[in-house]
Image (cartoon, rainbow, N blue to C red):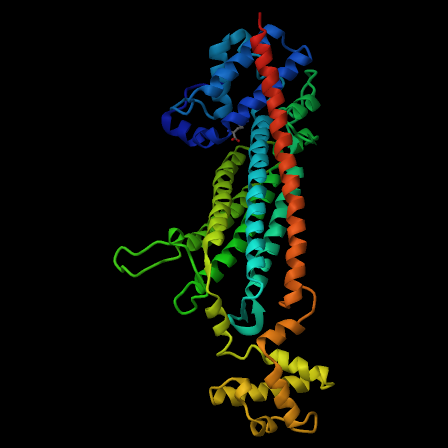
Length: 489
Ligand code: ARG
């Protein structure tokens, strides 16, 4: 439709190569809404008349309900929809729809509308998953387990502490998306191909109709920039790495060696050959799909880095990274949320895991510090004790006074007193005395749970408000379109 300046028709292979149509159906509905807002603006500013407007809007309404995804000669969704409008509304009216607009501001608009909706869905899913983690933390505040560094037992902890750690990481993801929304929610429409237009359009009008908070004002910036896409996919990649870490913990913890947790059957798969298998495939796929999203981020950034200002066709390839990214992050959050809700926590196994280890060591060293012994000396004393205990394969609490005596080089502490400290330092006392902010301490769990419950409510309210603001704007737009069409007489 656009090739009057050029000779020759595109052959099938070249058309297929150039075309983005198969990637564009995702944004077809946004393209129609954008065209309706643009058409209403053209009427409002007397650029087209009422009769023409009605014809165009009517055609667009009909296209909305049609299945337009069959094979077409169009290069992209913008061409396809415009050609359908011209077919339905006639050249006279339909041919005016694209006045004072370009596919360059149009495609930027469609992508922004799609990401805007996706961010709202992602925030909704994040809110849900965070709420589930907080609920689960509340239920597991007394479930004692080892904490790990280097995948080796480190300190005594609580299962709730892990869950809250995942929740806090997801809170940061949530906040990243939440803030990015403001930068996405600006309208590029009316920027034209790159430098604006001489036709007296009103960019604020279309922005408001489509529920945008403002404009991407500079027309070069509006048509060139895809940093909002890089930002969105970057945040998605970080979110996935956080989910992937949680998935990895759960994969390890659901092995028969650990058995800390048991996944509900519906989140696992079995083997085609080994009948006993219960594989954590859903978690493995969260891990696997993470690398895909990281790949999409690389793809977008490397696409952008060498482009000059102004629209370049390379930008077309960016869309292919957005849609699957949204699909992956939304579905990962949905399955993670259901998996968390249904997983069984094996309290006894978690508690038992600390028995064979020495994760109480730092607590004993700190008890010595509270007696006035320098930390380095305390570290040495306890280190020596662990060596003796571990050589004879027993816990620290099984050391005799005589054994304890051998680790004290000077007169820092009486062997009996040290022995008493070892006896009275238990996992329970450890969690009672751990008071530092954010620690595994019992009281800190309670405080953090209450605090995070309040925090998530604020995001839930904000997400709901935004979602309904956008929905309402589109409803108003639809209402205007329908009332014009109905009152056409
Ligand atoms: N199909 C293009 C894309 O997805 C739309 C914009 C085309 N603009 C142009 N001047 N060729 O990016």
